[in-house]
Image (tube, rainbow, N blue to C red; front, side, top):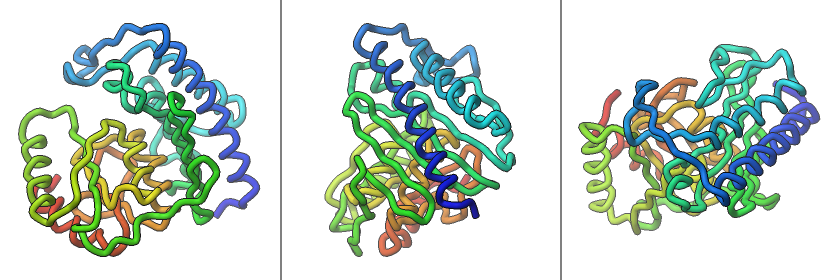
Length: 272
């Protein structure tokens, strides 16, 4: 385990990097940016990228490499650090690119620090709202410097549930819709799909969602939000209940009371 002072220094560095990336994103958000799809990179026509993503990622990388030249960096766009590195930063410079492209101010910079495969520091920052979510392992989760905890609800009939859709418009989409149907039959208050997984996870940690699930996410989508939920007293597993790895995976986040009931639904419809 790393000492508290080191982790606090890592958090401060991550916040500095996120702030600089946020400045890049807001300049493009306010002045316009050309959005491209990732078909040429093996993605789908719904999976978007822009110069904002690329420039923000490089700004983050510059800050982190200056502070920690021996650490590995893994990012959505260009950073290919080894997932088994002792010191690993996992970066999404613009989570919610579709929202960004359509001028919805619900997107985020997500930065997480992992030590020997375990999350230690998390920053999720929405620069359009000046909204900060931060966490250090075993030291609590904070929204704009105020401590937050997961919902204490013990029944699905008492909560909102968040969900995400991967870019797949076939079997995975139908599985997600089937799970949503089961959730409504369990009398949840409602479903919310906001399109920014890092912020969705933070809403679980802040007690606004009783749970969140998605059947495919990449490490940069969940690395910081996962720690935020755990530091707020919640549980994060795959949608089948197995431990998360630093790889593409399904995900379910909730509190200890709701997790078994949510897991019974999410595991029923998608097994990979």
